[in-house]
Length: 239
Image (cartoon, rainbow, N blue to C red):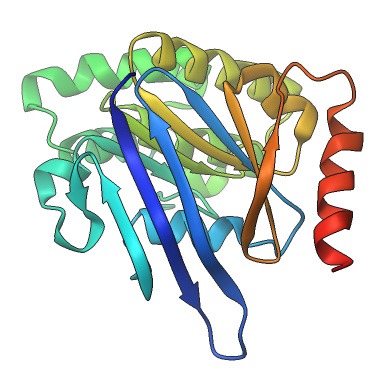
């Protein structure tokens, strides 16, 4: 069995009022794309924030690249690429500078930064915007920059929350190809989405979350994946 890059065992977090996630058990292995699907409010973003240490689990355990999330050191996070909720960019800086900073912050050696930036600009077709300030970009292109910042340092584990939300069809295809290429080279990818047709194109495994709980899985090659998804969610929410 391939190496587990991310492991959640009965992890949970509750906000005031009771919303949150509970008893989440899930893993992501080297060389695979593991998709997490659910309706809006199901708990996808909360789970991603737990994985990235933005929230601390109130129950269970989370290991990222072998380290407990709460104890993970800088060298662990340097091997992770993340996109959660909105692009992590500096609006007053141009695209190249944003990506160079992202590469440096993730520990890429200065001599390697320029080549890495050029490669990810080409990968996501951002070359024409290299000297444009991010605040002047459309929402879709700003999202591409945020995704490029998550990819630029060649992470071993990618954690992406709704990465296609603002992308046009061309951007979705480019991201799809980028994730499949990285998985083929041994990276692990955890991606959340409510676009079932898109994740079915790239996922090796699909897990379903509803009302803060994992409720099962879907076959990425299934004939009617949407019907299977809604059947699972309906069964859970009608309990």
